Image (tube, rainbow, N blue to C red):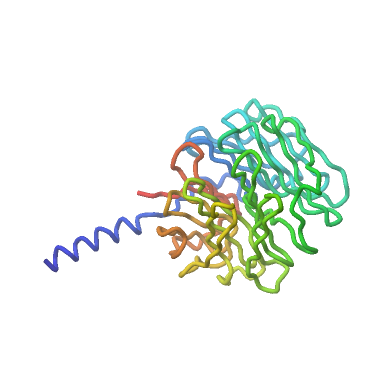
Length: 340
């Protein structure tokens, strides 16, 4: 009986720790990737600094680099792909810029540009149920919220009236660390997370819902990214302090939305390792997070985490139509989470 029990425990342990991260591409070792969009198990797009944009049709066996001409000095912090032909990318810094391709990167069109001083677009998100609907977030200008919306798959963008958006405090902003600080729940409602002088989880309900998240006194600390699993109404928020990447305090929060769309926030029992910028929920119970502290996984809705690797990644995303999980990061790293 003892031998049988021991064998069962060993088998369970082998399955539990079979996960690992495989780096399969280092084509551009001087590029820092932060943008990632995974269409299905084989098709994904990436973006980064030095005007870099690329995609793969075969799970990363080969990459197609389709850097848009004339934007060699721009940093494309986020990218959202509708399919293998259509992708929308946002560049941080001035001028504010969103570009789109409908022919797999052969041609790019500027679909939004803002020359206003101080503009800083952070990331994009499109509805999982209606890819015509999308949102783009920018840091406040003169303390006014900066939110863009599209209803034609990113071909045109309109600025939403700041009076209709949740207000941010002085020094509070969206961190463009992983292109994951906002997520559309439906065509009208979004969840966003902030950092800086204050850190909050925000919903654009009427009136707006704002729930404070604990953070250190550092202005480089707060929430950096999030993911939400709508069918189970639970989400995960990651962050910490990117100036102190070894610290694990306040680097992850679990939340659930009640029937009034009010977030109930709790802390994990065992936090992931170090600063985290990206997180992806993989099932009703499992998730992966990544950042300067490496890659960690959880099998209990984010309550406890174990470290897979100390290798740095900025962003991790699960396939929109499948189960594959890809990761991108500094030094040209593109990887995949092996879950066998």
